[in-house]
Amino acid sequence: MEKKELTAADVWAMFAETDRQMKETDRKMAESYSRLDKKFEELGIKVKDINSNVVGIGNSNGEYAEEYFYNSLEKKMEFAGVHFDDISTDFKLLRKTPDGKRVEDQFDIVMLNGEAAAIIEIKYKARKDDPKQIVSQKVSNFRFLFPDYAKLKIYLGLAAFSFEESAEQEAKELGIGLLKQVGETIEYETKWVKAY
Image (tube, rainbow, N blue to C red; front, top):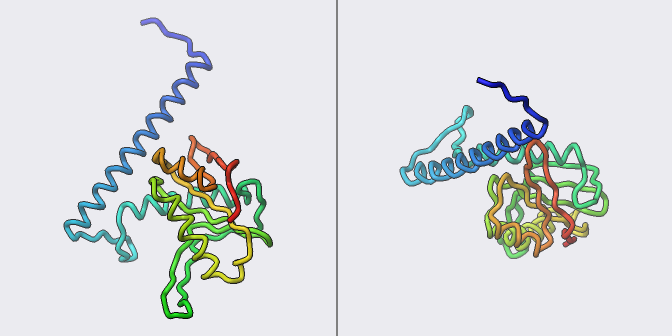
C-alpha cells in the first residue's frame, strides 16, 4: 500500500470535516435531549441532580450554553462595539406593580457601564419567537425591576449554539446582536444592533 503525503490543505480539510461532524452530532444530541425531556414530562418522570433539584436534560444544556457564552463575554467585556465595566449572570428579581401585579424576570447575562446595559439571552437553540420575546418582555421588565438602570441605553443579544434561520432574521430586524459558536470561538454579529 502506497503512503500519501498529507498537505496542509488536506489537514485543514480534515479539521473542517471534523468540525462539521461535531456540529451535526451536537444538533442531533440537542434534538434527542429535547424529545427525551418531553417524554419524561409526559410520563411524569422527574430527573434530579446531585443536590436533589429537579432538572431536565435541557436544563443541563442551557447551563452549559450560559457558562460558555459568559466566559467569552467576560474575557472581552465588550458587546456591539461598547465596552462594559461589569458582567453578571442571573439578574433575577420579583417586584409588585403599584396595582399589585407581580413582575418577575431573570436575565441570563447583564453587562453594565455608566451609560448602557447589554442584556444577553442565552439559548441552546434559538427559535423563531425568541427575538420578539426578548424585545417585548426583557427591556420593559429590566427597567421596571432595576430602576437604578432604567435610564441606561439597552443593547440586546441572543446567544445560542444553533439558530433557526427565522430566529436570525427576526433578531436582525429587531436590532438584536447574535453570538454563535464557530469551532472553538464565538462569532459576534452586531453591526445592526440598536439601543432601546
